[in-house]
Image (cartoon, rainbow, N blue to C red; front, side):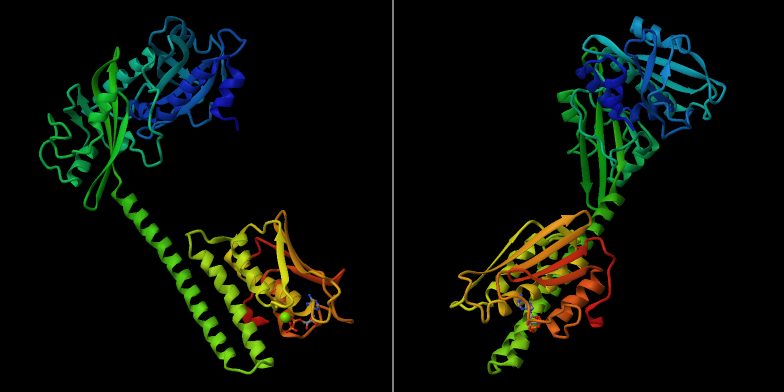
Length: 490
Ligand SMILES: Nc1ncnc2c1ncn2[C@@H]1O[C@H](COP(=O)(O)OP(=O)(O)O)[C@@H](O)[C@H]1O
Ligand SMILES: [Mg+2]
């Protein structure tokens, strides 16, 4: 699907500044469609085909039914099919008429509005609605039609869209949310029922007609700024629990301000939902923080206990258990830092590496280094991976260099590489290599049984270990694996 800019570039001969003008128009014309209860189409002259036009924009009203269910973007139209287009383009004035809309076969009222940019008519905006409009026009419809005509004249004069406008968001108010029309002095000439409701919610109960928003107590209203700069301005006003979004679009005639269209939206519910979501994020972070604290407490308790034992098997086992718990705590430490449920494993790695290096004695230090990046992954992958990596690095530091002193520098190197959805981790040392007859698949010792269990069942990956100028342990782990079994299954 081509973007609007691509469509205009490919199919018309318009220069870049004109393209940007049309993009700005299409970015803000929802209000025009809603005010006129009509479909809007934007036609630009087709490149190299005189008299032919391309549809480069289409918007349907949210206030009324549409004439066009189909997508007309990119559709080519010849002069005879829509003679009004060429007339509007060459005359530079609004041309009105009727047209049988093919898909429905019913006549539609069409108003062709030339779009001027830098003195030239660069495109034609059409407003199209069924001849029989479903609703009998009342005051609201008459006022909206009046404002539409004023903005349409600005389009023809090149004064709309504004060169500078705030980006609209899904929260920006639309016509259906509430409309006020102000006169040249900023006083309310008209307020739609929804706008009056929004005012009530802000605590304004006196009649709004004839008053300025400031007189109504809305000191922070964007109206003075819009009147001063002759540009649209928006502001969100808060009064206690209530939040109202106000957008003010100045209406100009030959460069002079004649009034303004003010769109009003009660965003109280949206803000309440934002606050709830925010507090949920904060709560999740807090939970990770507490889990981390609890794990750190457990690891301290194990360390205290280990220190009371004489050096030997029991003490060694408690020390190992302490480090396993600490490696899980590291993941929760990262999770508690922000609201994302993903961790950047490269943030955990330095602490893991330091923990392994600390195991070596100062007399025979082992250097642990790494290269490549593990990148982002869910906590359900990061936690088992941290524990497994901890075991493998510890084994290298503990076992590779025991009786092996020929190598002047004892080194462990970890490499990470990502292959699509798979993470490959290699832990390589330049030590003595694995004992004869060793097999990672059959060993019953605790450390590697834990690694095997985590990698095979919990991560859905594979592990290999072989001797190659030392020992190489290689893990292949799918990063998007669904959450697997827990540690209790090992
Ligand atoms: N990098 C390595 N270099 C040499 N031997 C290793 C290496 N990694 C593991 N081993 C051997 O595998 C055995 C099993 O390791 P493991 O299951 O972690 O138990 P533990 O570390 O408690 O001995 C070790 O005792 C050691 O003999
Ligand atoms: Mg071990």
